[in-house]
Image 1 (cartoon, rainbow, N blue to C red):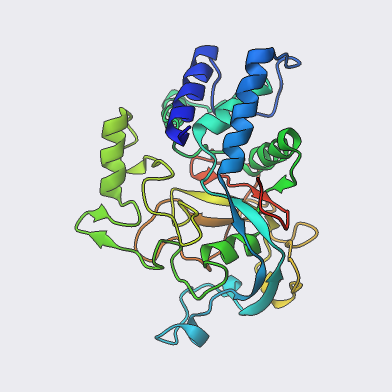
Image 2 (cartoon, rainbow, N blue to C red):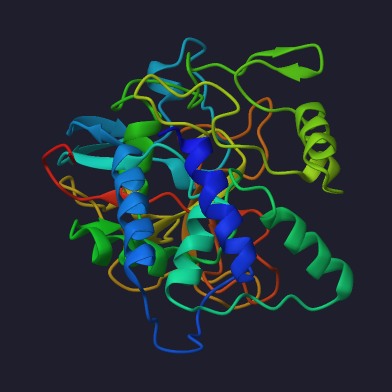
Length: 325
């Protein structure tokens, strides 16, 4: 069964149940599930497995490779935290083909009887609800929600699911560590007039908002498969929402990170301007020229205390050396 068909069926069921996308940190009651529910869960599990891309491990040079291997011999990233270029050796793993969609996250909330995030202000709440009403656009979550969701996938599948490390993300974005600048089908950003060819432009987002009946305009999320995948078959790595990584953020981590399967600092290291320790983000909120490059690092408060995570998404990994069947 195709992803869109399953999404529509499950999403309609969730809307009938009155489940509110937003967050999910509190349970309202102990979940009780009948045979029909369990059948839906099994279908959900099979879809999750089908959407995993196996990434064979190997060695690569992680970080801003522009000065050494770019044709212009200039850095691609003006920030220092993507340097120095350093050797990394990764074990094989699998990565989600798509960012987690609204319908998938809604299913998780509904199955676990989780309450939704409360957004203050009527306008903010209306915008938040609109972002959640399109089934195949990415769910928006803070780091804790992202981590809990990936862990839940591990619980229901019996597989070692987790958030990806930033090394795993970059390796996959660069087509197993090649010197790829943009995580698109051909490593470039291609735009024809106002329309994006292999990324979505503000024109594309505005058009999709109109078609889907929301007021999101140029801020509208896009369906995960609206543009071609990268050569590994992984979609949406150049934008459409920053992706939470497992790692704590350290601007100097590359200077002392281990070669084998780096996991980021063992403890929180770097505080933002509000005084909160931060986690690593990869990808980009919105795609465009020189945005969402494969080597650029971002960071944010994992609890999104000051700002709702309207541009933060999640893609889960499976830490297994074997392909998932």
